[in-house]
Amino acid sequence: MKKFVLGLTCGFALTATTAVYASDTLQVYLFPAMYVFNGQSKALDSEYTTLNFNGHAYVPVRWVAENLGKLVKYEHYTKTISIVNTNLTEELVLDKDFLIIASQGKIKGIEFGIGSNKNELIQKWGEPHEIGTWSTEFYRWHSYHFFFWEPDGNAGSIRVSGNVIPYRLNEIRDFIGEPLDEGEGVDGGWSYVYHAGDYQVFFTADSKESQIRYLNLKKK
Image (tube, rainbow, N blue to C red):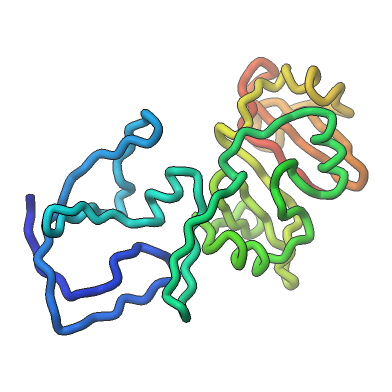
């Protein structure tokens, strides 16, 4: 294992942290470990490293928590790291209630919906896992992308993707009924469109027989 010496510092790879250096030093070793989460093997992301210090493995708490489906928050003033449960990695349940809740601008089981402010989400869920742009800025927490409209920074649409939608497109009719419309998706594939009050829900897959790639909830 490769050895190196570094200043004593706070060993948490969190977005909002600031390293504080002291005169003391630690002698640590790179530790190329593989991790298994609920039977699934996973290597550390490229920006993370496992360290061995005095026979103990040190790994970024954020990476471990997120792979367990949890959210991590860091409070700078109190130097407190919080790890909390979340519904953001649980499978969506598609039933009649799904469209009733969608008519309120929300995804079933998720507390924040369309109109929620960006700062509200950060305060409750911590820093996003990704910030990017698809026609407008989005913040991603696990499989949920929230698109925020300027200048207010309120959520204008929500996109859900990944394994939290374990359904094929042709199964959707059985769970929530006939779509109002269907056709080619905006980025290819095939979409079913449902109306829920002032909102629309788009389910998109590569084909009618394929697993859903994502759903979008937005105002009409």
